[in-house]
Image (tube, rainbow, N blue to C red; front, top):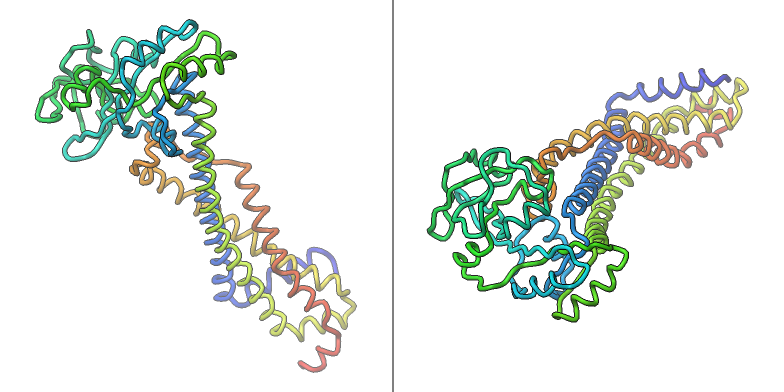
Length: 391
C-alpha cells in the first residue's frame, strides 16, 4: 500500500465520526493554546524586564539590606519601596574616587482620581542627565525647589493630563510643568517631583529608597561595592545581578504556569488514546480486510500513528493561533497588575515567533504520535481472521 493511500485512509477515519473528531481535536487545541499563551507572555515579560534593566542605566544599585528577592523586582518596575537610606549616604558614595554619579530615588504611593500610581522624588538636574529625558511638552524643573510635577508619557495619556493642570498630593496642589517623551521604561507610568519637596510633604525625613550608581570603570565593580559597604551596612548589586535575581523569580513563576499547561496536554493525550482505541474496535473489519489483501503490520501501525500525528498538527496549529490571540489580549490586562507593571511600556506587545510556532507544532505532533503508539501496536496485531468474524 503506497503512502498516499495510507494518508487517505487516516484522513477518512478522522472524518468518519465528526463529533469525536471535534472533541478530540478540542482537547489538544486547548492544551496547546494554554501552553502557547503562558509561554508567550512569559517570554515577553522576560524581554521587558531585560529592557527595563538596560534602560535603568545603572552599574550598581544600592538598597537597604532586606532579605526579600521581590525588592529587586520593585526596583526595576518602579514600584513603591520603603525610605530607609539616609540621604547623607548619597553624598558619601558620590565622593568615592571613580564613581561618576550617585542618584537617589524616593518612590512613594500616590493617586490621581483615586487610581494608585508611583510618585518619585528625584534630584532634577542629575536625573535628567542620567536618564537623558526629552520633554514631549512643557519645561523641566528649573531647580530642586520647584513646587511642580513632571508626568510620564503613559500617565499623561491615561489621565488625559495637560500642561498647567494641577495634581493634588497630601492636600497640596502641584502644577504640571512638563510631560516626558515616551521612554519605553517605567518612567512612562510615574510622576516626578523634586526630592526635597516630596520628603517635606510626605514627612519621610531625609531618607531615600535606593541609589543608582554609575562608574567610570565597570571592570572594577567589586572594588566599588566594597568601598560602598564600608560606608554603610547596605546591599549593593550590579545591574547584572539585579536582573538575574528578577529573572530567577519570573522563571520559577513561568515554570509553574507551564506545568499547569502540561496537565492539560496530558489530558489531551489520554483523549487521543481513547479515540484511537475506540477506532480500532470500530474498524476491526476494515483492518482485517487490509491485512487479508496483503497489507503488512507495519503499514497498519503507521496508518494509526499518522492519524494520531494529524490530530497533533491540526490541534497544534489551532492551539498556536488561539494561544497567541489570548496572549495578545491578556497582556494589556496583566500590565494593570502592579506586580508586572514592567509591561507598561507603550511599545510592549507579544510578537509572533517562528521558533515558537515550530516548537508547538513539533511538540503537539510528537505528543500525539506517542499517544498513538499503543493503539497503533494493538491495531497492527490484528489478524485477517478478524475480517471473517466481523462480516
